[in-house]
Length: 184
Image 1 (cartoon, rainbow, N blue to C red):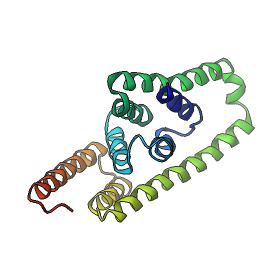
Image 2 (image 1 turned 90 degrees about the horizontal axis):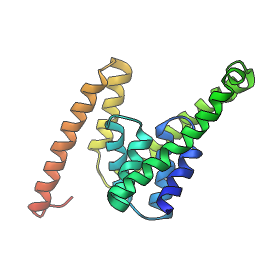
Image 3 (image 1 turned 180 degrees about the vertical axis):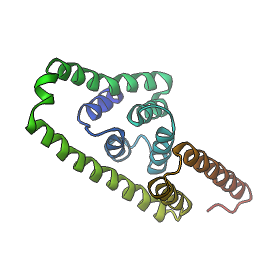
């Protein structure tokens, strides 16, 4: 039940899209509960981002499965989608009043700034961890993907595919190093 209520609370208090839930999940599951380590959280975030669907739901599924198998994944999906479903159902009843309200529009614009700051914070925190472990390839892949999409309008499917290939080769290389006794 702690798993369900953890993601339920995170989902209920998260505004601005899926990336906002990542630092909150990291704080809860890595720092407070210790159910996963930092590297596992980075890996789960990467998988959740590259999988189809909402990153918050994907990350919750991965976390739930990691902690409690299939029942955990089902619990976390339910815990993640229930709060937005309730909130959207209530808002839909008052949609006309919200749509035309200038104060609500200003609040939403302010929330966008906060969301951008939280996403930037996640990138910095995860990059710090990679630098500390002297794993520079993921940082360069992150920067390369950003530049390709932002400045060269690269197709995101191609970027994800290329990043997947790079990740697969890096994993194979690390496994070979581990087998040869040259663990880095």
